[in-house]
Each structure stands twice: as structure tokens, then as C-alpha cells.
Image 1 (tube, rainbow, N blue to C red):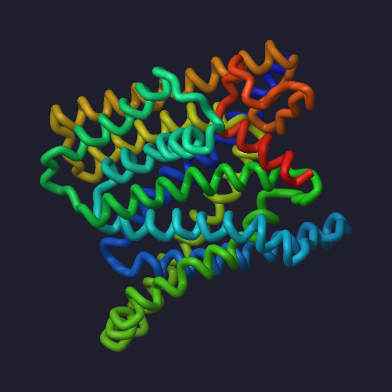
Image 2 (cartoon, rainbow, N blue to C red; image 1 turned 90 degrees about the horizontal axis):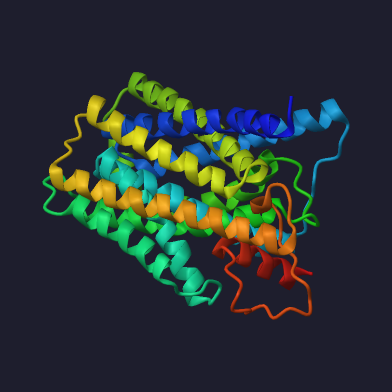
Length: 360
């Protein structure tokens, strides 16, 4: 079996669970949150279960392999895992809250705007040059989203703002996650380690908001329902927890083992599948305006993937980088000007390089 074929097979094995869990939890949570309207409580329960499951997996791995579990200092925990966990909590918490208020098609479209926030942050930080192609990418995605939501009868302003904010947090979350998992001196052994160290921070960012916004309503619900209903809701939350744990493990494996370019391509396919399933089975309505918005948004996303591909090829040819360049910290010659006008590094890769230099 050739190396390229092995790489493709490995990528498919890693991507299939991510694809399945991602689609599954989206539709499952949308269905469940229509029955049990406490999205932040559900997320808090999921985080507790993921912390428990990751602890069990780490203990089992330690016992079966006699390998000591990784330990990190409080300073690393606060400075590295803190921002990642808090942004992850905001992403997951607001995504579930918004999913209660809007349909799956709008949810999928809005979440795809994470690309815009990554590019805008890169431009503000001067990590990426402002070019016509980047402007057109941002314009296509944002314009497509505008057309998709224009005069929509099922539009929820609060739900839209929540998902848009979650989308912003998502871009920040995965930038930091990939950096931490690929930082050799931190020494993470697996995605389960990443989940274990980020869950407390995620819970810290979500649980107080649940108490403030949903606490009184949940107490009222608790007083007026039977033990059978408590048991049913607990089982459904538990099922969602396993979905969430499987999704997060598979997400981290895809980020760690394959390129972000691969993840972007899979993301496009997943979004299209979500929209098709939402129309076929959830009753979401696709008007001509929404279809035009979808086409414009997907054009922007595909253009972004093509831009990344061309950038990676340029980096490979210039620095002689081989293999999976998206999963490597790029090291430039020290004598070279970091702001070289010929450089067209992808924003994520430049950010990883900058962060790597600051830690060395």
C-alpha cells in the first residue's frame, strides 16, 4: 500500500466518526431542546460527564500501559488551557442555546462564518495581508448569510446573535487547541488529555450563566414534574453526553492527525448534508433567496479552502516542507524578515508560528 493511499485511508477512518457525531448531535440536540428547554443546564451536564469519562479513560490507559499520566503546572493550566477552555465553553454553551431558538439550516449557515472571524483577526493582527481574494471570501460568506436570513419568517434575532458569537469563539477555540496539542513541551498524549484539562474551564464559563439565566425556571420545573420525567430527561442528557464526548474526541483527533485543510473540506460536505437533512426531515423551508444565499456562502467557503491549498503549496515549494504542513509549526530562517512581502502564510499557520516563538 502506497504512502498516499495509507494517508487517505487514515484520514477517512478519523473523519467518519467526526462526521457522524457532528451530524448526530446537531439533530439530536435540536430535537431534545424542544422538549427540555434548559440548554445551559444540558451543556453543564455534558461537561461533567465528559470530565468523568476523560478521567476514566486516562486512568484505564495509565493502568494498561504503565505510562504515567501527564501532569501540568498551574501556570500552564491557567495560561494555556484557561483561554482555550473558556472559549470552548462559550462556543458550546451559546451554540446549544441558539439551537433551541433557530432551525438547523440557519444554525449551520451561521456557524460557517467562523472563517470570517479567523480572517478578520488575522488582518487586525497583521498576520495576513489584505488582498482582493480575502475581501471577496469575507464578502461572499457574509453576503450569503445576509441573503439566507433576509425576510426569513422563522428568524430569531437572539438565536442568530448567540450562534454568531459562538462562531467567533469557535475560531479562537480551535486555533488555541491546535497550538496546544502540537506544542511538544506541554506533552499531551491524546485528545482525551486535552478534554480532561479543558472541561473544568468550560464548566466554569457555562455553569454560572446557567444559574443566573435558568436556575429559577429549572427549580420551578423540578417542583412540578414526576420522578419518571426526571429519569427520562436524565437518560436523554446522558445520551447527549456520549454524543458530545465522541464528537470532541474525534474533533481533536482530526485536528491533530490531519490537516486543517482536510477539516475544512469535510466541514463543507457536513454543512451541505446538514442542510439537506434539515429540509428533508426537519421541515426547514428553502426559498429561492435562501438557496442564493447558500450558494454565495458556499462559494466563499470553497474559495477559502482553495486559498489555503494554494498557500500551503507555496510554503512547501519555498521552504521545502514535506508532509502534513498544516500540523507543523513553521520555522522560518531567523535572518528572514517576518513581514516579507512575498510571504502569503495562512493566518492560522502564522499565528501558530508567532505563538511558538513567544514560548521558546
